Image 1 (cartoon, one colour):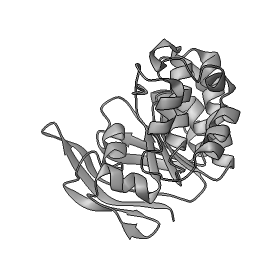
Image 2 (tube, helix red, strand yellow):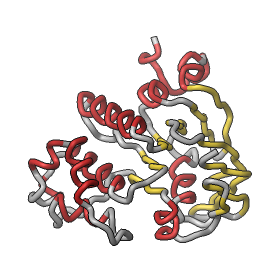
Image 3 (tube, rainbow, N blue to C red):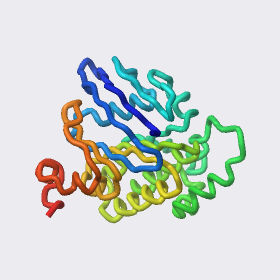
Image 4 (cartoon, helix red, strand yellow):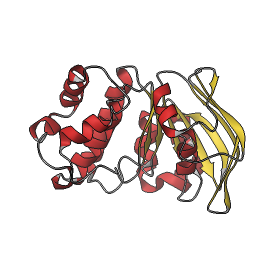
Length: 236
């Protein structure tokens, strides 16, 4: 098992945001956490990424306990995160943004830059533009490309489709699937539950800090409760 979360409890802003959740992420899979705003999804990812300290429970990655390790240490283990809102550096060029994703590496970056540019030809065309001049979709591509530059084993993505046009959303999800096919495990948080469950091998429903339902992506897509709560007309 690549990632194993055991009875994780996290307080965030004085609130118990995550209330003892347990779940697993198999190697080379796409796993999604769905739920309403405030359910604890982002807090869970931020805790795995070493940005938030848990109150209790533990996090195992490839059999090693990584609970409470710092963010740089987590990246060095092979876990990277594409944050909500993209968080690119607007005053740096596309190329400079990508190189920041490889800040822990000392080796040659050429092959990895070529991989990113193959996935995102538009970034190659705009490699000398400042990040802030890119469209929202291009900035999301840049955030994903930057995460790939650390050669992750596990990529966590927080709301990659947020604020993007439907056509761009479909493109982003195609890229997520392509990255997964290349051997990178994906842990995905996504408000667009319909799209997330369509690409996910496994899904977990998070409600007010607790996992209330789990299954394959197809099982959750077909679940009447999930349809009513998260899919709306899209499930018909």
